[in-house]
Each structure stands twice: as C-alpha cells, then as structure tokens.
Length: 484
Image 1: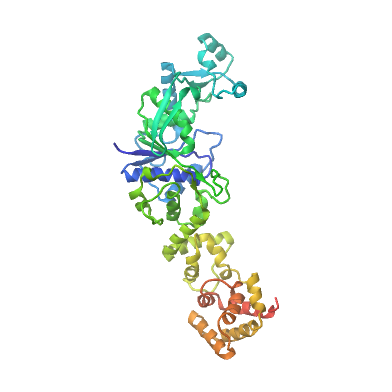
Image 2: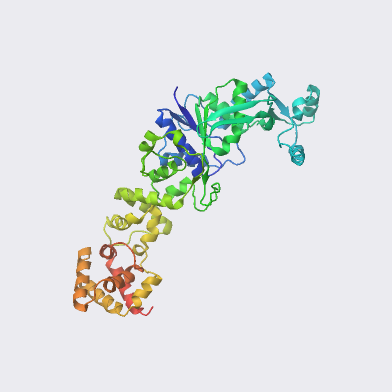
C-alpha cells in the first residue's frame, strides 16, 4: 500500500502556523514511508474566501520546502483539487444516500433550530437535531416544496450506532451515534458541509492516513458514518496535540507573538529554521540534538513519538533556533535577505562606499540575528547619518576623560589617509601612549560618539565601515554636546 496523505487548507485568510504544523507532520509521514503528499483547496466557504489566499498558501508552502505529488496547480489523477470544482461529485453522492434512504431533506429554519436547541438544553438533553423532518410524509415534503422552502439535507444516523477507531496518537476511541443527532451534509445552496465533503474527497483521492489537529476529533464519528454508508474503507486517523500559547491556552490566530507564514518570509527568517521549530511542536526526535534538517526529521519521523499533550509555541525558543540557523548561513544568503528588508525602513547604501560594503556590515551583525529584520535595529548607525544617543552612551560622553579622547581621535582620523580597521586600531594605540588612557575610558567614548550606544559589533571594523565624513561629523557633534 502506498501511503497517501493530504493537507486541505481553506483560502479564507493567511496561512497560519498551526495549520502549517499539521501540514508538516503529514509531509514528514508521507516522505518517511516513501508515500505521496496531496494538496487540496477546501474553498466551499464562499462567504469567507479571500482573493489571493490560495496563491499565498502555495507560495508559503514552497518557501518552506514542501513538494506535493498532486494539487490544484500541478493536477493529478484524482482531481479537480479545488472543492468548488467538485460540486457535481458531491451531488452525485448525495443522491446515492437519498436513494438508500440514508439522507433526507430538512426544511427547518435557523429560528426553529435555535428554539429546539434551547429547549433541549433546558431539559438537560444533548443539543443535537431532533430528527423531526426525517419522519415527514411525501405529502408533507411536497407541501414544504410548494411553499418555496429549499431544504438542507441531513444524514440519517442509524439508531444505536456505535463507532470506534484506533487513533495513531490517542489510541482507542469510541463514540455513540445517538449522542450526535442527524447532521447536515449538503446545505440548501448545494454546498456540502465539511464532514460530507471531506469523506468523499478523501475516499476518491485514495487517502490512506488522515493526520490533523485534535479539534477535528469530534468530527471523526460523523465522517466514519459516511464512510460506512458508502462502504468506503476509512483511513487511519491521527489527531495531533493542540499548539498552545505561553499561558497554555489554544494558540489564537490573533496572538501578537505568532505571525502568519508570509510574515516570517517577509521578515527574512530562514525557512529551515521555521520547519525545524514546528517539527518539535508535539513530536520528539531520537536523541538530544534539536537542530535538524528536513531530511533528518523525515528519516526519524514516527507517529509513535507524537505527544498527546499540548505543545507550547515558545517565541524565545523560535528566536534561539532561528539564530542558530542564521549564524551558520552563507554570508551571501544573509546579505540577500537583509537587502530585501532595507526598503521597509527607506534605507539605502550610503554614497561612496564599496560594492562589498553591505556584506561587510552584515557580517558584523550576523551572529546576533535571528532574521533579516533584526538588522534594522542592530545596524541603524550605518544608514542614518544623524544619531540619537541612548542613555548609557550619554553617561559615557559625560565622563571627564571623554572629551580629550574624542578630540584626539578626531585629530588623528582627519589626518589619516587610511580608513581600515588596522588604521583605527593604530589611532587608539597612539591615544593610549599620548594620554595614558586605556581600556573602557579609551574605547567607550568613541563607540558612544560614532554609534550612539556602548554595545555593538567590533569597534574597529564598525568605524572602518562607516563613511569617514559621518564619523568626523559625529565626533564633532559629541564634542559640542559633551555635557549632553
């Protein structure tokens, strides 16, 4: 048997991290078993579909390194792969259930259903549908039709139905059909509901394993009944633990600490880092190493190592892991990512610097970056000619020896034709000899004056990478505001 799994996002918004985690687990599982990963677009929620969302989903998956055997853009033997293009198929299968007496039209209005639910709750009963339209006579149905009522269609649950399956993550699970109530499978506008549509699609696309979030666990009994009604072979199910925020609540799409996939791409994260991080949300690798390539994850991926308990989306852990990848990335790659984010601040390379200047400045900060967007904070002094001093820099510039150090460094810099790290180092050495100042009082005033801060990248390389006129102007300003 060839393993076939699918991920079926809805184009109703951005590609969210929780969905990507589910897609990744499907992808890892398929590749581990030399199987096939299918992409299907569930676009039947017509009111919520967002123009361009499908394209963004495909672009996001490609950025993360996904490949799919079948999908809306590549086709395949079991298409179409957009649900709105399969409506005639759902109607065909609805008719089969009607012919078997396993589906019936329901003429209840939303108001009637609301009253029915409220009554059931008041009586301490399950709030499922009572099934009253199931027992209408032909004459009663004809009367409803003559009144112009367009029905929904419900699945007729056989009384006393017991459902059981073995979940790859949660073990043996059982449900009682009587607790569910007849459920809608096709709405009055001809659009199938999720629990009907997904079974038809998965069965016809020969999906062997359904791996999804645990919020779908309650859908499984409804889907199993549909499988049984058509005598389809049900897939093996696996329900993944929820992704939780730091407070151990279900992760929200509006959580400010968690971005949609396109935002990570636009901020210049490396996709390998995001894949590695998401792989560890609910799955435990063999061994202690947490920095793993996709191929390494695929080699050891096993659903037996998926946890039942919720997985915490730890933003600090993501930033740490992203930094590990960023530090190891080729400088050319990092520079390209940085160059792509510069326009967001209106920054451009200063006039008069060499063609390798940006790469040199990126190299100064690469060790501290988790994403290209971090460069915009770390390297501000290289792009804004006029600085703002932070509080620590102001304190350093007020120290008694600072003025003499700055004045001497400016004098030596103006007279020096060389503008290299080695030349800057020699200037500091001369100041030390002439003024008898060394260590922090020697270096910190110059760093504060030319960068606006007392912490940062290698000072000699920083000075050499700044345009000489900028450095001289900043030294002048610091000297004129030494009582700042």
